[in-house]
Length: 311
Length: 274
Image (tube, rainbow over all chains, first blue to last red; front, top):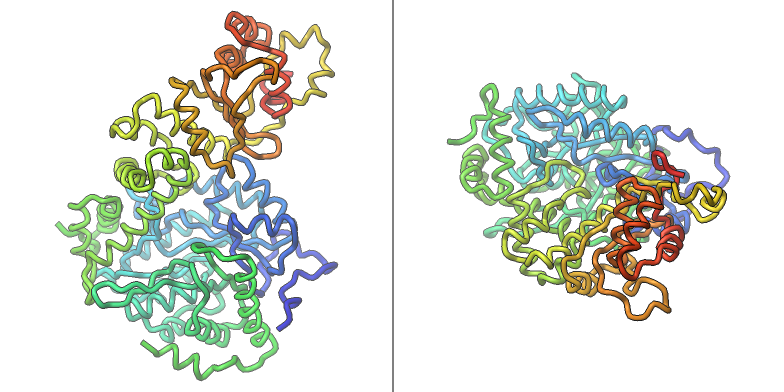
């Protein structure tokens, strides 16, 4: 595919500022790459930022994002809403997010099926929830609160998991599907997270994809992960620090085959390479989106199905 | 006792225990592992992954916010102290740009820095605060010149929201901070004042602020400059602030105003200002 396919078309009529994200491939905007976007117009179809990085009073970050936002559709991805907190949501945090979203008018806002806040302390991680009826009620209540306070539909991302709770009774995909039914939220399908959970905890991606409502999937994430060995056992860590691996690409193709094209993000947060590497990954995602768009059979579909059931 | 996550109130109990566990509370850690599937690896090792992620993230946040302090203490010592701080004072908000306030006091309490050198940590934090402070329209020389001269002395010159005045209990603190500061983040004027004013005086304080081009700058202040700027920041008129400062040696009001106007130090629209 030529690079021009992912270039923002010069002279094309501008979409409304808060229009939904295009069903194309975007990249995460990280501080080190900001100069690339201030001095040129790199070929990303859209950009995503971490909301909490922009919850500041003023200064260069928000000023730079204002300039970049004029040229690119934007998605705001939260990491601190703590949708799974039994104590409820922080009204101050919601108000700051609302002000940010009203200012930058992102085409999509999202956060995670996880929690980070308890007893007034913020844990700088996306902590897992027990998949119970109680947790489902908590997250649904918090989602209702968040969507009302933000004045927007939220997309909820499936987490990377390293542990499960003995008390869990609801499969993750059913938990997410029920959240969609109860709250009208959207889903952010992180394909790498799905793969990480498959390898770490034995989650079945095919059954997972069967169980989630595809029409609710508003965005897809792709990323690399790290492998560590703990007492002879391999664990995958969702560190967003490398290229997307082949089995994840295959799972992505299978996802597109089932649900059709969706805005797809290349996430890269650690060991950040030059922007060109992210754009190259986005270009590959765009190839699969294009194949999906014109009804071609997904490349290596058989291989993708095999990957779904690989251990 | 393991957290009972299946009963009413169980999730809240689990989360309160787990947030303590991932910040290093051993009793809470043991309590939470009892609720986690062993799954062939061990619940404690699985939970430790989260503790490790948080420790790595927060020590990284502190290292970035306190570059000169890290240089002064050395990487290994800084890492140990940062771990101690995040266990004693974990973040309360998800906005990690605000995390790290009070690290200077922690370092003094731990005996890692003598009080005079704690100014190194305070300077680091002032840069962090200045970088993210609220935006403001700076007062320009042209705007000031448009104000009739007879009114200028009665004007207030509030400082922009990013401005921080930090007393320096020892000249050594400034020199150490200058030696280790991240010049990619802050521009430092090492010898303030005019070229004809002779050797730079021993700094009494430091000024950190964000300039109109959105870069953060720092410069040492003489006693007179500190007195004048502190009075202006407190809302005194230029006349009163200058009168207090002129009682001290080595004070040059014109030079201070010229530098301040050129660097965007004064707020164009303070309450009751120009």
